[in-house]
Structure formats: C-alpha cells, structure tokens
Image (cartoon, rainbow, N blue to C red; front, top):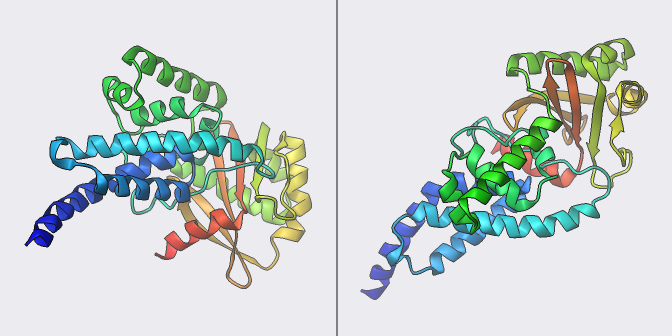
Length: 299
C-alpha cells in the first residue's frame, strides 16, 4: 500500500506542475533569451518540486514561479559571461508562437526578438522584474517577494527597464504592416536591389548576423543605411541562389525561414519595424539555435 500512497501525491504534484509549465517556460525564456536554457530551468524546477515537502504549500504556482525565476536569474548571470566570449553578434533563440501566441503569459510582452535583444543590456534582476510585471501582470508586492527585494526597489527596477526600452526602440507597427515591409525587404535582398533597400530601411538601421562563429557571417553588426544596403547587395549572389523561403512566425511576428536546396534550414530572418521603416535586421544563422526552432515547426 505505501507505493500507492506515494503515487497519489506525486500524481497531484505532476498535475500542478503541468498546469504551471507554460508560464514557467515563458518566464525563463524571457529572462534568458534561450529556449534550450529555459527548458533546462523548467526541468530543474520539476526536480526540486518533486523533492519539496509540498504539504504546507498553499499556492503551488506561486512556489514554482519563485523557484523558476530565481534559477533563471542565476543562470542569466553566468550566461552573460559566456556571451561576452560569443563569436559575433548574439541574438535570442527564436520560438514558434503559433500554438501559444503569448508563450504562457498574460500578454505577449517581452517576447519580440528585438525586445529580448535589448533586454540583454539589463542586469538579470531588472530583466526578471520587467518580465514578471509587463508580461505576467504580477503585482509589485509579489515580484518583490520573488526577488527578495522591497516593493519600492522593485518599482524602480521595472521603471529603469521601461526607460531603457523606450530610449532604444521606437513603437512597432501592426503585424500586417510588418509583413508587408518584410515582403518588400525580402524581394529586394534576394535581387540585391539597392534602390528598394534604401526605401524600406531607416537611416540608422542595424543588421545582426548570429552565426556563432560560422564562416561567412559578419562578426560585427553592420550599421547605417549605406553600409547595410551595400552589404546585403554584395552577399545576395552568394546567399540566395538555390534557396527557398517559408513564411513562419517567430516570437509573435511574421518571419522568413530560408531553406537550402537539400531542405536544411539556412537562416531565420526577422526584422524590427517602426513607422519609419526597418530598424533592425536579425539573421539567426547559428545551427544550434535554428535546429530547435525548426523542430518545433514540424512537432
């Protein structure tokens, strides 16, 4: 009989964990910018939940959220050091948001690739505070408890994060306008049309190519309309022939998956668009980041 007695509480624990899982992943992913690392955090949270004396825990989701957030902050602190030695520009690992447009959150805040990239400049505690408030609508008091901080300090953390994003990014456009500009950009990039590129790109546009050190990917961001246009036109003949494109969704926005003739994913193209035009071009080329995303499309 003891085995059955043990099984019942564990079944309940598993149900409670699975109910909270989308939210746990959503928090960890936004704090880390990596789906693989977020899955590791969620798995570690589950292991801790199994070993915890759950008899006194009144709110399982609150407990699980606290564990996940603190683990994500700790990992983000070491990830920052690893990213300093990353070869070339670092971009977030994309996620397919068709099945869960909010990725476990109250709203789809802090999910856009450009926002995740900008959040990298915050320290992990500021980032966690912003994510819990803006994406998950947690009260400041609750966030303060999770971060083991004061409510006043938590408000300051969120305020600093908001100001940072407001200073770095213009208001994005609708998904329809986003796709329209991405279509125009894709056509111009494939043909190397400088005139069209100059129409759709902003004066201070930045192009990031995350290849993780792979040959052919620019090791530094390319900045400015003239440089980016010439860069795109120059590599068009080498990059686009014998490729096909698939329209997909990544991080809540239309995106383009570039596939080689043998059917392998070559790049994921994402852009950040304001009323002025294309502000950022983000090329995810690193196979380690592409593989999980492509797997999720067919899963």
